[in-house]
Length: 417
Image (cartoon, rainbow, N blue to C red; front, side):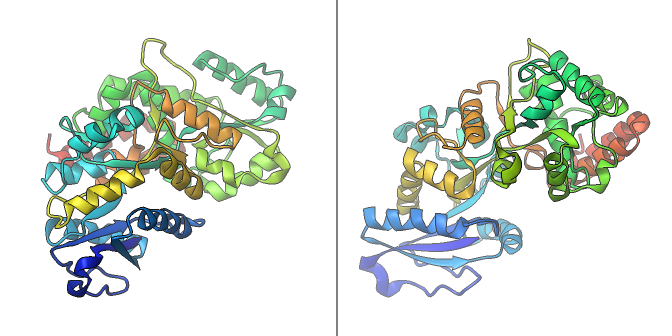
């Protein structure tokens, strides 16, 4: 994570010192920015490039940078927002944002959306940035989810074209299995990879509105519509369309299965395109999750990172200036490229990578809703228990009813509804 202090040079003499690894109190004229930075890739350099451009465009603003470890940031952000917060923080959209908005800890940015044209440029992620009709987040990069697949294995199995419907997808799975290839690779040891499957089956069967109600604890897990999701999933497991012993593999361990041709497809975020080994890059394609019910508007998983202004921020004027700068189409594109993500601004330059291009167009043109991924769309405790339950279900699908009863008991305890 990065903690940044933005101060007017005219008031530099009153600025408080920045303590490495922590945030200290800011002077009344200070704007402080805390940014979530992953240890993966050149995240820090990407942020710094954007900040340097901001400084060049705003020479009267001084930025000082402090880096905070990811785990520490997640622990501290709640305390910052409730007491003496920085003026801008980075976070996640969806439930994680709504959690703080509901408690009155975030600044309403609806006027910024209207003034800066964000409603048009960020139409696909506006709903994920909204709580009770008001926008609280300024979107950054996001990931699209879909199927990576081996074109050569499809051709060998006699599959003509990318599956667009569930029937075509099941037919492709059958042909791949008959050709001696596991149709679907999944690293189920990482429970979040199973969560992607639950998300998409629910979005395609029940739609975005139902999915979000389920994520917010408003729907019982014993509801027949939830069981329909697991029943569709159970058929894939019962027909042995997933790799054997999937629970023994994490994401890293699944890559060799694609490389050596033992598996043909994998549901994963577009960030995975940067990890595809050179030997199979030319033979790797990507397509969106097929339609199951044509009457259900197409929705997608597109977890987006965002910037927020705390309600107790001291320098909201400079904070808004920074957000407006970061939301520009080219800055949004540059940040996304540096992070291996997709720009969430529809006017941003399209990614050069062929797979990223598909993901960008998919999300930019999605109007059925953009979900924020299972563990970002609900309270953490429920998400953790839900993903454990998915592993239990995957291990023994015959226990489906018992798994749903257990999940419902957990939902009642956590949400008290």
